[in-house]
Image (cartoon, rainbow, N blue to C red; front, side, top):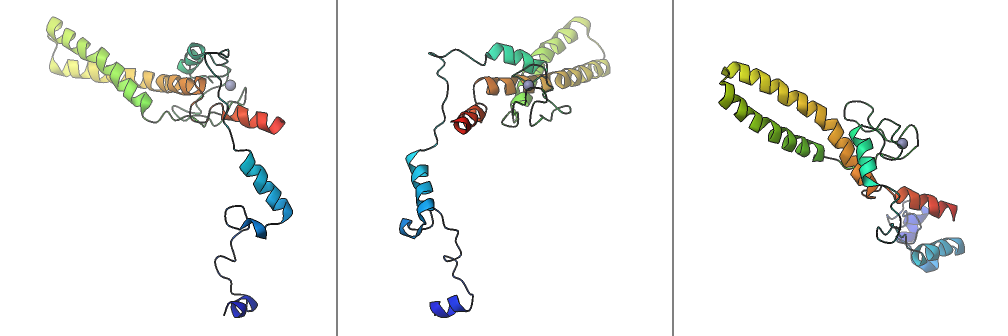
Length: 185
Ligand SMILES: [Zn+2]
């Protein structure tokens, strides 16, 4: 049956598998492929991280957070971090730093709500107790105030969060240096 299928061009799924270290027993591999497998298994990929205690800090966190607040690249502080209001550029246009590694996710929104609420809620209370403004006037002032403050803070806090992630080698930031080093060696 197997011989018939082989002759007639019908292939078992296992026969159509690409030959590699995981799918093929090693005796079936060519000498070159065997050599490749050995080099893969003997040298596992290691991610070298700088030790903050013994090595100088090459990515000062406060400086990069300042760049992030100004919506600039956390590495050079020159290139724009965003290509529009909130979309992060995949690479810095000035220093070519990869920026797509960031995982800011909902962090900027949480921080924005936290800050806006802590500023506006006491202000609302103070305004109401002191001046007793008309409800419609209060509504108008605080709606515009909350919106304006949120729109101001959101991209800046996103920049700060990305800068912290970059400065602390999180989510793939820093692994590009290891890749470059391993290419050079
Ligand atoms: Zn840059």
